[in-house]
Image (cartoon, rainbow, N blue to C red):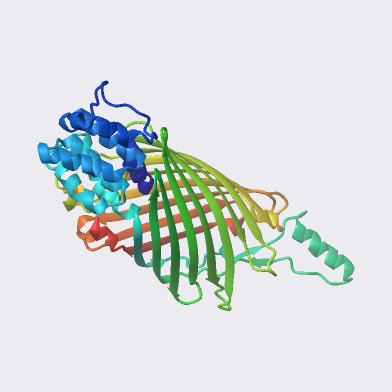
Length: 458
């Protein structure tokens, strides 16, 4: 979420000129006439602060960055530039992909001030740098999990009368005279806890074209476990496109992933492929509240020989409340860069259509989170809680009727300043599933220590 708000802020949220008078030049922001009109009234614009702000704004929206920089330089040679002009000048550097040049302006705009310009400047300093050009990064985690296997827990189950398995056993017994079969089924895998280590890396490139932002990214992920046999590996590609609009932000994402997991018993690989698309709409409602809508579709399939696939469609809507940090000493606050909302609530719906049918379900979920500052501004704690109800599309083969599963989840991220300055965070998460079918019941927890070098840079 934070990345989308940053993009929106840079390109749209404060595009309106500050205190521009009605007599200011007012061609359409998309008009190719902006440079010529500015040139026609150049002497007047340079000497009038409100007109200069308006001109820089129009030139930036049209993509005439060099003209805007030259106009600001001519004004600076004649007089001292106001905070409004310096702010617009910094935004020109951001729009042209030079956040490094804008940083010094933003720092000056925040010192000793507590207004809208200072607030936006702080946000840009934290978030604009990763939006353009090449970027690479990695992170690692080390922890312990009560359940390493991703499969359901092993259970001893008897098929219900009238179920698919019960009917199959009856047919076999009817055709084999004098033979009675034990109808006890052992399903799932033995659950085992243990240690694990995760490593993830990415390399991406972002580009600015007019008001659109584009980014391509390659991802890699690897998990090793002790005891062995529960490892995972992932290769992925993603493409993002972001378009600021009058109403907010439109963000599109395409991705493909290849997951490889190990079977505990034989150490054989289980491979699955995922391709998906997401459309996200972020609408700033007030300076404190954002509304986000997400539409998504994903398709999951396995290699030939395993008749299994999954198609998911999902929709979510959320309300996000943004925090407003104090404008002083932004470079000394390491934890504020990781948490950009102090609370949020999100409702989602998803429909999974699967082969075989009993692997699919309809999901309704509610998730909420909050960021809680630690005493004496020594860091923050992020809490995220979720409740989800999954109604199966078809009964399990050993059950007569379909049923539902209730999932609960809790995630706590502990980020004290003493750890964040070393790139560290501590995370605890727990999951619990309740169902009338023992096969779908599960409880697990994990404790992780994350290492993210980028935390130290923010």
